[in-house]
Length: 529
Image (cartoon, rainbow, N blue to C red):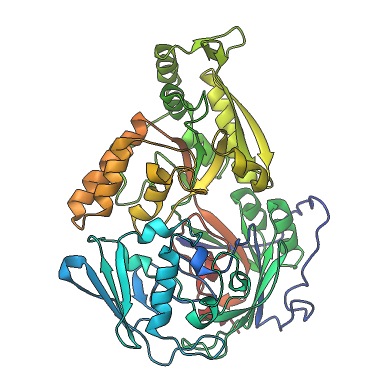
């Protein structure tokens, strides 16, 4: 992770249509607050819910809630609502946490062990619509031992379990009175975190105000606004106009601020990859030979250089090149000749128009990407260009997620995924056949017994060597039978006004901008003057 100072003024980027602007930061307008105490950040998306029971904040960094544990800048674990890291006994089957004294929810009610138990039991309840519950599948039971101790008993030793207890804790006295799927807690949350939700205008902004009674100390940033701006160009324009204090930006737009004395660019490495899902239910992408040929046809290095301006790495699978779990022998270059041989061997023959066909069916499919996402658009177009060189026609279309989601079972999507903390966190939900079609989990409906076996072996072992061997097997299996074409791992870039100090970034997951970014610990920021 690096931070780079950028200087001078840059040429304006044309605004792509009229938008409703938030008040300029520090203006004392609708978003209020003096400049020294108010921060307005431009992000591309907003959460569907603010309830941890449905998955919000499950990887940490929620501003409204705390977990038993939290992460430092280097992603190591530290105590949060717990007084210390867990006591682990019974060969890794029992985890005991002692709660911090005097912690209160923002409504003034005290935190107890019963709140922790309620949170985990509700997430694991089959009636709760939390698509991430498989990440807690190792839990056999969770019980309170008095008011200040919580004991988790696992079905099997799970090496990554402690990292899963960054899950935010919710108040039973509020959320327990509601349906977790439809209750008002989803949009009117109550937590123990450094901020409380002051207002949420869907599709426009979320406003948070500092919790003066926060157990970790009242934040110096008194008002934090997340302005939801899907279009990258508009986000850059609003940052340049002074409407925003900071924004998450793609590399080409972040570069336009390189001569601005008043701003800094912060760069975070990530596990966030861009990939093309190749649904097994599609008659073209369902053919393993087509998927293998596409994997061979893509020029990953060119995508990093031309699309990301070098701010990223080629992706040869879901784990980045510099990850300690990465299998070094799966790196591969573009090989159009081998792609052609694979297709020929499977009966895909070139037609007069250069597009291959098999049994009268052309090698043609549609690839969707979300509207307004320039980085995904450029990946999709580059992918289509490379595929055509192998005789496969990819028709690229943009659409909203409301349009894309019903089509994911049969149509390809330029997708983004990636989780930090442990390989299990991202790989299991991406690839395990038991989760095929479960929301955005395993959206390609991928089913490979060798991959399932590797995932299950790695999840249930505490032996690092056993886990390494399993993940090596998995990565090699993905080369032979890819369910996705992995393209790049992207670095995340953020541009902010230079009036706060001690800003850092973490190595980030796919979900960024809202919870990640230099504001991952905004409650700890200090003014420069």
